[in-house]
Length: 160
Image (cartoon, rainbow, N blue to C red; front, side, top):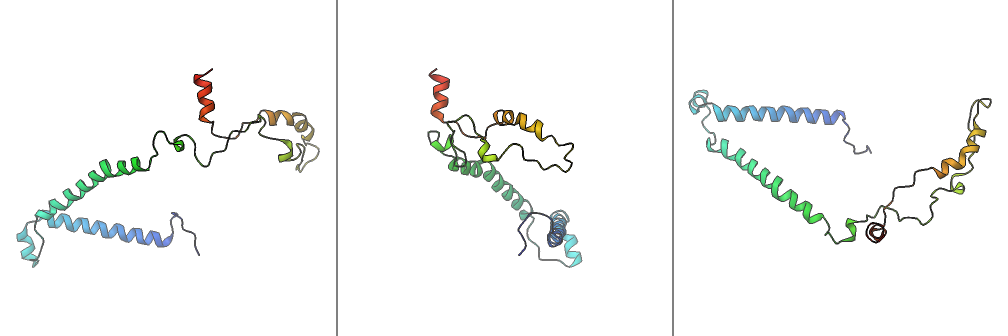
């Protein structure tokens, strides 16, 4: 079964082109109906058309609905989904990790030995230089992104 992706496929291209042509045709027909006088339609033999009132009313109604949604309903939904200011979810999320007590986030046991070599040319291998500086790499490594407890931040900012 094919994977659902937004990538362009031949069937999507055909559907998109058909929708483009149909909407373009409907828009041209709408403009012709809204602009050309009724007498010209009677000459051609078209006598059953909606009133011109709807040529103005429907776009105004749709723009009003869009404005109400954009300025009132959509921001209200965002405010309803946002937790309160005193909720703990505004400070910490579920995907973050807790701060570790030890300062060394990396250990040599987790990553194997420093000097594993996969060089093709053994004469130009820099394995010995890497082993000399391996401890410096682990100490100078950037720690993993994590949340700071709010109580520790408050203590640091306000009580010391």
